Amino acid sequence: MQQAPPYHATDMKQLLRKLPRVDDVLTRSAVRDLSARLPYELVLNCVRTAIENRRAAVLAGNADESLVAIESVESEVLEIVSKRLEPGLRAVINATGVVLHTNLGRAPLSAEIVSQASEIAVGYSNLEYDLAARQRGSRYTHSADLLREITGAEASLVVNNNAGAMVLMLTALARNKQVIVSRGELIEIGGSFRLPDIFEVGGAQLCEVGTTNRTHLRDYEVAINAETAMLLKVHRSNFAVVGFTEEVAAETLVTLGGEHNIPVCEDLGSGCLVDLTPYGIPAVTVRQQVEKGLDVITFSGDKLLGGPQAGVLVGKKDVIERLRAHPLTRALRVDKLTLATLERTLIAYADGTWKEKVPTIKLLTTPMVDLSDRAQRLHDRFAEALGKRATVSIEPCEGRVGGGAMPETTLSSVAVRVAPQNDSATAIDEALRLGKPSVLCRIDHDALVFDVRTLFDAQIEVVVECVSAAFSA
Image 1 (spheres, rainbow, N blue to C red):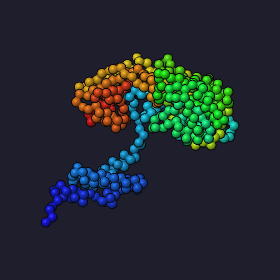
Image 2: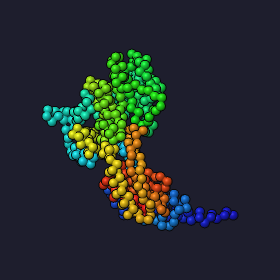
Image 3: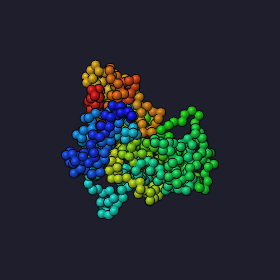
Image 4: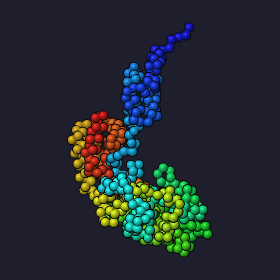
């Protein structure tokens, strides 16, 4: 005689039988309303997802009668649809102390500049129209005069990002030809993206010279042959080689390139436009490298420049014109919003208001006295809002430039430490990350650490509200 199944198995089967069918859920009033204004496939997929979620809960032994009721399924369908229609890209408050945080969008943009640029985006513009000549123009003329004035270069070109700028430069100047690079400069940036990969895409032949820590002028001299199309320097923006080291200066390579009629180019990476050494940030400026006679210099728009994502190429006019005329330039071109934002950011450098109008520079150069004042205000508000639920204190800390820039440079800063008395810092951190807006900080010895260098004054009250809500969750 066959034994009866255990009680829990019987109960599970009964719950599975009570799960509503897809068609039944689709006839519910609220779901029908969704189907009337949204794509049917979207609603159908959400219904199927809601039912499968409950089926999985039943099979896992985590369900009861209420969970399989059609009203409950209908409610979850509405929630799933709402979440699927929410933008995935949203604002984040950065309290990590990393100014150019690659995962958080790198350079924050000026609200004033974005507002001005949005006037271009929402309507028509003279993107490729010469208003004076009443004829077709070029999008590449916008920002050209500003870049020439700020960097001292003869000409410029803007593409979608610095990797694109490198691919264009290698393709247009050295396809099927040799490019000589020091082994100590064969960088890998975030996402396992390596310089040799850029060479492969650009169709250039990579010729490594020297060793990881020492490369001499004679290494370049010996490697030059009839197939050599470029001498390339690459700024080691995300790592440092220290100790027994040697590298060949850009101006020395320019002299060597001139002797052999070979272009000398540099990937400068961060693209600093002003001298930041008075603020303890030893960044090489674009103008400094232009004055050394390099043929082309590439750099990012959204790192130390403090603008939108873009790849900027500056250099000698005849070489830049070769790049501009290459078919790949069209595939890498930037849109009107990027150009409008970049141009207005460059204007801030040209008119001397960069320290006030470029948020990245403002964050990097904020004096310690201002950081201490900001930390005190945040501390007092935390203490008031959290009371005995946490111990709040102020401590010195070190931030980072970020964005793969200057790995050896630290930024003296001030942080507010919030140590929960009965709650888990990890759980609170998760609530902050998943909240709206998201708040990112550091965790240290079961305490939340908020570096105020990357906090804007207007965000202090918002952070306090978010942290208070996370403690109450």
